Length: 378
Image (cartoon, rainbow, N blue to C red):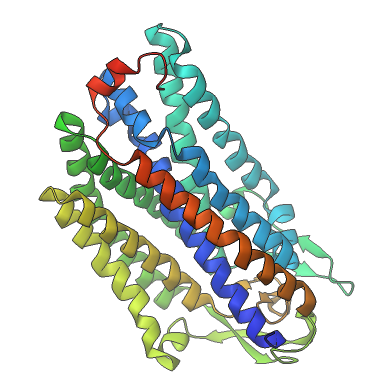
């Protein structure tokens, strides 16, 4: 098949594509959960909102499983460092996600307003907290994490949970939440009508403007205020994985990859143009165009981060040499080949299933639909 260097690049692209699929599908689920107590003013309206994502929210979680599986199988050193060092943060994400399945399934079991209101706020927590923590994680990927490797390549995390909550990662957490709320509001405007659609369009119009401002602020912060590592010497892109076989310092530039490959500027351009375009489309009632533009803008934002970091995957602030790159943190060549063969079989199935599911359920969810499906809908 392909040589080791090419396989590593292919898997970097696949991992980025799966992460994008996760953010674009689960992202609007999170956003609608976070918006639920605000765009639905009574029980019927909230049931309309919930049922816009009711048939697909659990299927969207497949992207999260794919992303975790890909990192585990292909980038084992990255998986070990992230999931052991950020254990508390990962558990918080997991625990808040628990509110979603039980909230969806149990909310309508009782007629009590207190019962349903409590689950509405549970769905709010399950929709708002994970994107904040995931945004904080992305911020820490750019700032760097305090970890080091020993001579046996064992990972030692030297930080704490509260050490993750620095100003820039917190800004990224706000951007993560706002991006999901914006994406969710745009999706909601596609799937509802009347007052709910109008409220969703207002949220999208205002949220889009604020999101662009915060993205520009974060970009300026990264370029001007955060040092970037640069590889000085390394074993080579096709050498066996060994992070300790390189030397690194913090003399790099976040624009270096973009200047070396100007086509990469497409990603930040899509981010800066896609989000305001989505806000403008949403404000004028062109919901489908708004959703497409929102997906392009958020996708562009993710790939901007990926292009800026390349080839780094995790940056170590305590021992720069321990930083993990795609050249020294991957599994073996044989593992990458088999993983690619399996992915080429199953990823198209996931894509076809996702496309089919959305085609079947597409359309407006109304109060009349809720009345007809009183005992079958959420």
